[in-house]
Length: 479
Image (cartoon, rainbow, N blue to C red; front, side, top):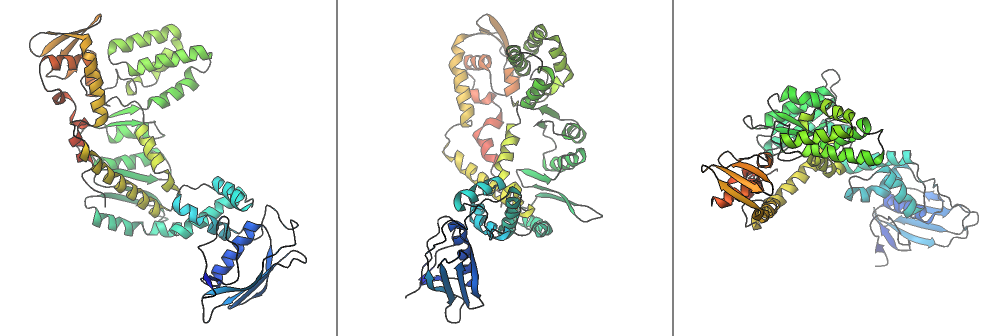
């Protein structure tokens, strides 16, 4: 056959067109011709352009470049019949702005990359188009072009909102007992918010973070949680969230992320100090936050007061009971930062630029895939606790050689470590250092006591750390 089937859509470094190349139809030929001209940096115009024939030539004065293509038989295939692929126009017409880089054209150029890279930003588009095609596209045009590409790939934004009800019904069919709440403005009938909870996870979408919006989210979250299970929240104190948590969860506790406390500390309390003293104040702030018990907490506050009484007052004014271990009334298992929430936000970031239906579906697939891997992962764990906790416990057990255990009445023990003495109560799972109560993992003194009593160590670790609990957490599948 004298004609050859064309390659896929020309992107970077397109193959030189030649006589006999076949295209799917006339539009496909015109698209590839335009992409080729943009890549090579020349302008062209049509001499002939009807339903069955296309003839184009270079705009350069006296330039012989010319191509003619026509329909094969009854179509729709198009083939190049004749072509002079020589340019004599040099660089006279070349510039960084090509007249055929319309929104639709740029969208076509980047669509293939966007299909594989969900979070493809306009600034990245500008760089890639300049690098790949030598064409400078303004940022505002790239932003519009990206919207066109998203619409072509994932559908219209308005249609996406309209299909949410249908999607919710399908979720309820495939994932029974899911909790879904979609809020629509009663007057305008416009979308306001969407909450979706599968069997083991929940997430919500809301355009703004006001108090009422957080109340709505937490109200739905409360329906998904086990009523008898105490809950501790760790957050960055987002606007409205600080007030909403105690309102919806009055019996539970709200821990503040230490990283955000430090940020406020640096800008509000320590900003006027020299770097050396500022660094010292931050170290002391860490001591206040990580103090395991009241005596360590008081000692850290006293140290802060010696460095700066004003900074100590700042600490006491800023809800220390929400971020200092020794003062926090709930069980936060040593979690001092909102890293988990921030990791989740980073994990779903590529999906957040999509129309809402595609965004929700993309997140569902991510959760489904993650759950699948985490059901497979522990199959080879021949251990009682999760691997990281096993390592922590092994390190603690290595250090118990430095402790001397003195039995008291079978349940109370004194443990001497260096020049300090600690009291361990095995039945109550307590140690006077308070670390066992805080982390729900036996501390060094508790481990020494348990070993001395010949009791099974794993019986005194929170069941939340066990392999069985890990497997149970991912046992329910998202479909």
